[in-house]
Image 1 (tube, rainbow, N blue to C red):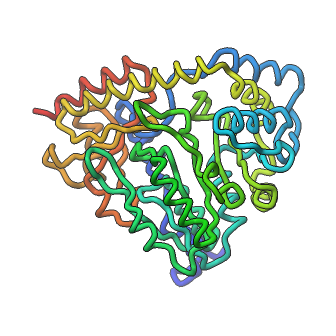
Image 2: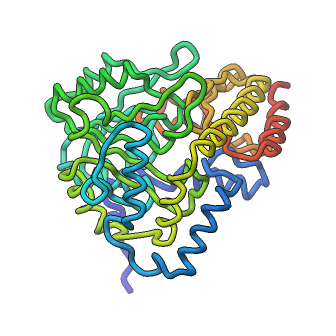
Length: 396
């Protein structure tokens, strides 16, 4: 067999050449190797509701979803998603033509971008952003145009003038994430109204990642961009069961949008996984119908964990940006005399027995994110307490 010469064409196509192993895989492997507490990757260390797990078992035993489910998703889940959007936000969607079930939100993002972008189209996204955004834009042949959220009065805020200036004649789509990972920012009604006005004025498509919609704290309020005037017909809204019900391994997500947009996204999605998570779809349909008390208790539990970790990080000497949503805390390492988030996170397991993620991986402009580090608080209180105890050593 002839080996490839050094002048041979690279195996990885140029669109993906800048993307290697995700930071989550690297840091999780580091946690395993060192025995450190993993506050890097955002997955819970507790199980979701027992009755929903039993619903999945029941579906398996009853033979529901063990074979290919319908391409758009099982009717029960599509109806439950539509009811959830109507009940919570007053948004009316037809379960048959305006709801699509996906293999988690990540596939929904990929399918939407692959379906809606032509090579050379510009996508304006809020930086820092979840790492799959950049890869999916690249796979679709688009050009990403970051608009950076910057610290202001204890939170990361959107500069609306910078957003408007980023839109050009080549802009096809705005990619939004609220509540925002990794900063914990929740876009306000006023900010979203301005975004909607811009989208309508410039006739832009909007894809919104709202997987943390049920994790908003204090006075913050999650408002779907699709609910603003002129936005329903141009917005692809993405949701997911993983973050809300602590079943991240089930990979059940969904899209709600006008029929033409759902048809477009489905055209790409059917050639990715085609279908997935059959029995789990039935269980998630039941989960979305849980009483409001479940969502309230879940939010209160996460808020208490946020407060526990945020206070401990502050005592350890970090600058702490208290999140209004999600289950991540972004910190500034400069008060600790550090400035390189990558070096800090790679040494932290040995220094303190804790794993975090450098925010710079979520930036095109790496220097903007260099001093920021993200910790996940979706862990049991005793795990967070032990992490806080270990991190206290950084304060000297």
